[in-house]
Amino acid sequence: MAETIRADVRKSAASPRRINRRDRFAAYRLHHRQIARDSLLRLLRHPFSTLATWLMIGIALALPGGLYLVLDNLTQLGGRWDGAPQISLFLQQSVDEAAGQTLQQRLSRRSDVAHVEYISREQALAEFRSLSGFGEVVDHLDANPLPAVIAVRPLVAQSGAEAVQKLFDEVKALPEVERAVLDMEWVQRLYALLNIGQRIALALALMLGLGVILVIGNTIRLAIESRRDEILVVKLIGGTNAFVRRPFLYTGIWFGLGGGLIAWLMLTVCLTWVDRPVAQLASLYHSDFALKGLGGGQVLAVLLAGAALGWLGAWLAVGRHLGAIEPR
Amino acid sequence: MIEFERVSKRYQGGFEALNDVSFKITRGEMLFLTGRSGAGKSTLLKLIMLMERPTTGRIVINGHQLDKLASRKVPQLRREIGVVFQNHQLLFDRSVYDNVALPLIILGYQANEIGRRVRAALDKVGLLSKEKVNPQTLSGGEQQRVGIARAVVHKPPILLADEPTGNLDPELSRDVMHLFEQFNQVGVTVLIASHDLGLIARLPHRLLTLRDGTLVRGVGNAETERDYG
Image (cartoon, rainbow over all chains, first blue to last red; front, side, top):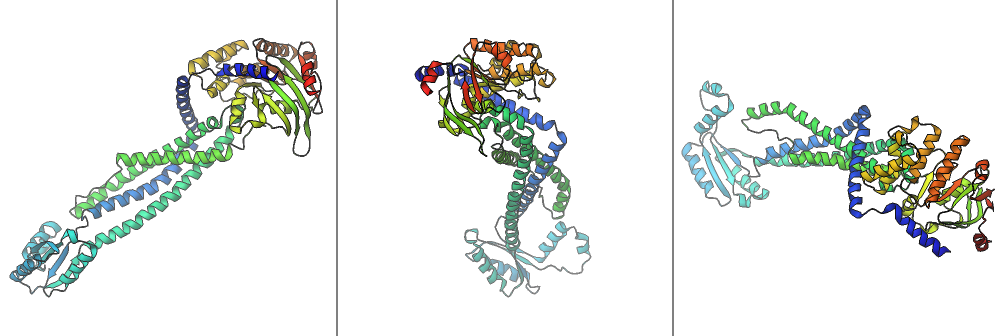
């Protein structure tokens, strides 16, 4: 008896699902597209609350993104000196040109030095006049106040920070030298600051990322609650957990992607806003420095980060709350 | 097709909804499950659907031994059972068409196939003209028929109905029962929980009658009585 039942069973069980694999895959893809579209339309049906969520996520993404941009630009600034430090030796007023030239030749024979340039007092004045914008002031001076300078570039091959420091200490002690400046110092400080900045940006990104996950998780929790009936029915007629989860995951992705888009807009607006003053400042320093905006890869990264955080937040919320909704 | 072997269900708090219930329903059978409210009809249906698990006993549905069925296989079982709910369980945020299409979407049918089957099911229950309407605007009888269309659209081998005529007038009730008989004639195993004894008495189908959680009558099937007597 039981045998006949089982045989019958097998026959009938096959009947409602005679679909081949390829059709099933095509239907699956179509289903994904429909769910993606449907969940986006659902969001757009409540434009204000959706926009509020997008803004919240956008701000949370834009803050670390903006800090990253600032750091990126400062790195670019530091990178112009490119770790090739320069030692400027300001010579005593009493050292005349011939003595200065001699010192230059003496220094250039050193093995740890790549290049030595002597800048006479006249050259220094001419340079100052042309670059500083104070040329007229200089014309009114009776005597040239500028000292002669010897610019020493250490050999890059041994330009470990210690070797450079040793060279610096030695040339600083020369009797002809009144004052010595190691240009690398501010670059080093800048890099140290940038290092701190990067850590702050990372910490901020982690905290705000967590914030995004929580915001989206909470929003998805409300969405789950409002679609409780649908979830029950779907579970009753044989929808798998993956099927039930899917629309909420897409909702999370849309929230995150929208937030990423808003973050990108905010950053672009901010960049445009500070671009002119930065260009002005750069021109004051006779620099052709220009703000580096978001590259295509970075825009993509912001959007992807948003989408990934959205997906993750939704996934966590769904995992926590869907199990509680079981047909009774 | 549906087999209960010494099944009991005790809820927390000690209430015994079903007590030592055994029966066997063969493929293609149609029968009624009757009894007063509280006699255990809903519990029995819930056990078949795996909305509840039995305290003791063994249940086999369409070849699945339920106590050995992993939770991730539960959707698979439910796809083989069409259910008509007393309160219809329709979704009012979408059209009649989309309600009926839901089981096919879950099963992964292609769009054109879905269209064909949904219209065939709606035609069967006489609601083809209402496919674009929101079910909220339909009468109780029409909503019930949408629910029936959704239950059968994917041609499940088993059809369960929980008080399908509960809120309907006698004429509509007869129509609904007639629909169930038509499905049964094409080979679907049909189990209908109902306390509408007046209606049932006029129909020539086997009865399972529950009283206080035990099966009292209607296992008019000699084999079953011999098996479990």
